[in-house]
Image 1 (tube, helix red, strand yellow):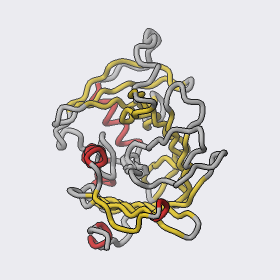
Image 2 (cartoon, helix red, strand yellow; image 1 turned 90 degrees about the vertical axis):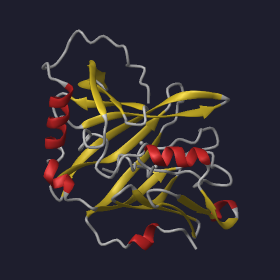
Image 3 (cartoon, rainbow, N blue to C red; image 1 turned 120 degrees about the vertical axis):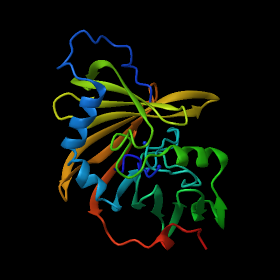
Length: 275
């Protein structure tokens, strides 16, 4: 799902929560990690339905912050390089369009004052065009941007077909997230990197995911990405609001999805190097 897109972040497509280590004595039904994931996939539309998804497109608006807000990125959406020359004093939103295609291909377009910033990832390499910064030449992703892109899950998220992807899962416990009981899962990917995902104990939909730590003021800070406003799209449950938070930073950034299309026609050329 676009959660990995959540470079919109990877499209937006993507945090160590202060709740980690919280009291887990009041637990919902005792399930194994495998059972939690099985229920999650079923709640999101089912394994076969997600396996049938080859492409996704979405559009909406995303916050770009203000002068006092550090740049945040939503797990699952790569926003590297898409930025403004100067941030406004107040939070503002820009329209975006995101296209995703297996395997791990993405194209993000962000509009501002008649110009469009673009970043594409073909599953192996990434490029960006940043006219907002008066940079009209195509640039390759930086090493950090490539690392973030390579960490992104495919369009159906890190839980669908996790075993096929070589991911190990562990149920660390249960805890409250925004007042609701959740299961806290630890995913360890085949490259050795780990990520936590919180699954609601009633709906079995993801409520929070651990984002990649951000370097602010010379230090790395944990990032939390919250998923809200789930709606059915072609039989699949998808979050339409993603909010990124850094503990200790007052202002957050949201992505609001206004339209999602499942399996639109997409040529591979949409994800080729920008010209």
